[in-house]
Image (cartoon, rainbow, N blue to C red; front, side, top):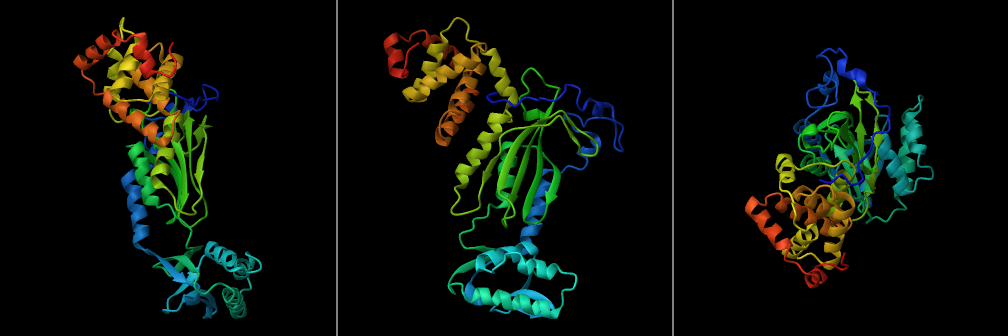
Length: 399
């Protein structure tokens, strides 16, 4: 909700301006409400479309957890396979071969992959691959468990240990849809296991401050369930996107990345994703109109310090939390002498604490957006009743 750490466009002001009048196959200039040319917008995907594509891939795969003693390598009809003791056989992708080599201790992790890629590959090479693979497997603890990602097309896409922790692409997409409702998926690349592309932020939920026509926002995202890349997310601003997808005047913010290993706290990761978006490209909740309406709830002659003390008392903020709330308003929001400024001061303060407090502050901010005119007048009247002794009970430092 706040504009804390707002990204700033650093490119020339006219960068990408030609896109506004550029004639394309589907029309001239930007898609309404965006800074994206109509031709490129037609190539973007909705959340439902991406979700459907992802689900189709999931319906055609199986993750098999199996002990090493049930895994072997075989040469069948001049081809190399990873086989299981139940009779199933899979053609490993190059990535899977690389992972198999590393995890079983093949002397050179690239040997098997490069041998199969040779233009002269034949049955003897397939036999050699099987012998090398089985020789490595015989030194692996027979009870050690590996996870194979297999598909109905007969391929194995991954060979990882039991400790590998994939982050479900569906979960990631759902989180993005929750925080960026109505976002469009652009520059979409990847495959059944990998997410790679941008989420374009709708103008309807982005806080542009005084500049409501100059740029667009997006989140560059990545995730791979089989280990080709970490989960990542980088907020960006841009002037415009051309009809061929060229991004003009882009400024990228700070990236977050998480390794797929061990037990992953998805709740914590979700909060990290939300915070990264909120701090770098301020988003307003779907109730943007309601939030902006709080500008009309003016402070007047009432004491801002008293108002903050009143809110802090009502929601049982600690002295440290209340003091940060007051300091953030004083430093950044003193010109916004309204409920709007009070809410922004609160959300700014929340970003100074851990995820749990940050979420609680945003929840309080949400409830303040629902304050009625009568309730606001009560807060204003109460604000002027606070004494120095009352302030000592609320704030760690008095001002």
